[in-house]
Amino acid sequence: MKQQRLAKIDHEIQRILGTLISQELADPRLAFVTVTRVEVTDDLRHCKVFVSVIGDRHQARQSLDALNHAGRFLRGELGRKIDLRYTPELSFVEDRSAERAIALAKALREDAEARG
Image 1 (cartoon, rainbow, N blue to C red):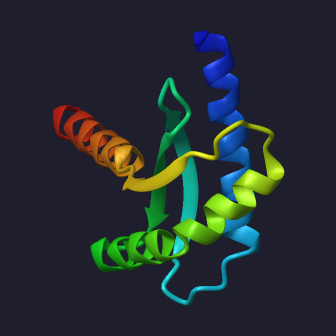
Image 2: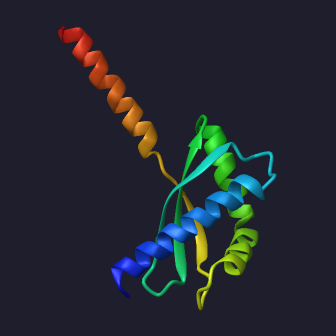
């Protein structure tokens, strides 16, 4: 499948899931969750959903558990909102790139202050 079409599908799934998670899920285990990236396989059967969680490790683990628990609901709603032959199976993965970027910026700032 063309990469451009896959990128469009990734973006649309990311948009829909972001909206569903923020507006439809009322699980108290969910912290502030943001869908940062989505990767659909070429056959559109599986989808990795990368999420960023604001909070500590415990909140992140609980949020991922809540998302996995709501996976069937989210997949069903996704299937209703997007026109694909197959609705992909969803697997949620924690994206810690924002945390790493903040830590790196802090380390660079501290290094600059120490030098100068």
